[in-house]
Length: 422
Length: 175
Image (cartoon, rainbow over all chains, first blue to last red; front, side, top):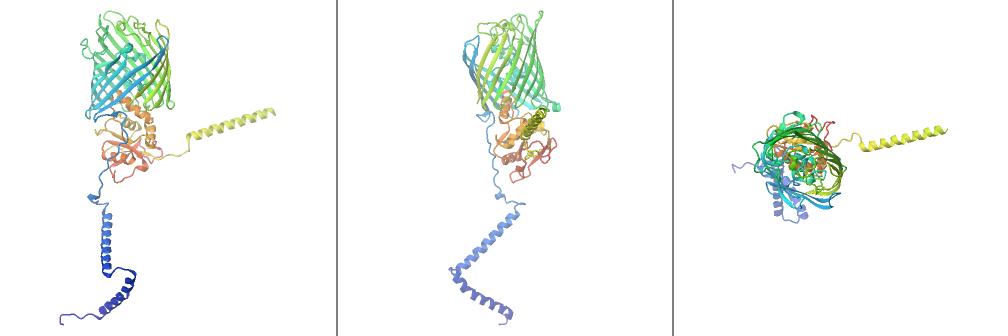
């Protein structure tokens, strides 16, 4: 027994009390819980284990702000794109927009008629961060009822920065504001047609609206003035009996047309644009060559409710030994939106010399009666109408024109047009 | 006596006219001092820009400016059409409604300008997330929606507009 230490009396006493308490409580517990004592021990073990698990979880939660477990971090959820951009994407790179217009027309000198206006397929693609391309194919009804296919624009553009963009191909020239802003696609125009001075060459227009060449555009550092420049070099317009106006594949001479323009968009008056352009070309026509200079000036203001367009054009034709021929033109257009309705008014004036050496080859004016085969010269008069956007992408227009032409009776006409895009 | 009656009628008419005009004016102006929740403009924290003028902000969202001074491409992002903060932002900053905004980009594309339209998402959370993930992105959310959560963390920040923060009384872009 040597080696065994005696049990202290107070410890024995405590052990005895604990044992008596245990004996006293066990019957009570056995009455309350039907499980045998072995299951109770198991439960206690499980409870202890659960407490330990919960303690672990609390520890983890407390530690989360400083060191979140890698496995707990959810995968970043991709934001959902709610809608397609305004231009429809039909392939990873290609975007397509279609414009169309149909309608009816009643003029006092021609039979009343329904109209197929045009179907315009407009495509763009971004080839890289800096390179983009644009194509526009047009189906348009001619006066002889034939619907002709016309590749209106094809352009490859390189954008170095906001200050320098270069493009090459066939494009609408920066002669005036209207021609560079509104192309085909009547939906984007307030009126049913372009101002006469900016009519396309196959519709009685005399200005070079299309160009094949290169164009440089960009901003000029000018603070809040918003100054921009445009420079264009191209083949210029061809004149002659039965020739295509745009010199797509062969220039008639080595001289190139040069067009330059400046415009500003001051930050302080959003929607205001003031600018001018100056263009020169030496034209090869049957007979002596003609030097052509075109100057334009514009002041426009467009915001959500108002549209105020004003442009003036001066064209100067000089033969080497002959006289100088001047053409003057202007138009002013005002419209105000009232919800989906937009009433508008436009007055336009165009006056060319009857003996102008180039306009001798021009097609008859757009408003001239069908029996008039020659270019008329002076055209002027008011147009008024209303545009109603019955959906976000379709508009109905009704326009009244009263047009005077030199030597001809005044024309009164009503045009109804539905223009849309999809 | 008759003169006194006429004067009285004229006085009554003037009072009614003034009250009518004042009522119309009050109704058209709305409750005085009822400034709405500010709409704050957010950029990625790595973007050194801390202030923009209203004109610069307009250019960024109308794709009239393609790159930041750092050379990074500008990537605007906003909620889908119909979201109240989008409607209000376009009205105050661009002077447009949703239809004008769409037409602006259509016209710009048709004019050969190759604009970059805003990325459009469903929620303010997605706006924050895209701005947080893209160094060149810029967006806007209600100030109540601007908070640092697990998605954006500390990677987005607000910029002042014309030197004013959303907390300033003179801040213009509000609900």
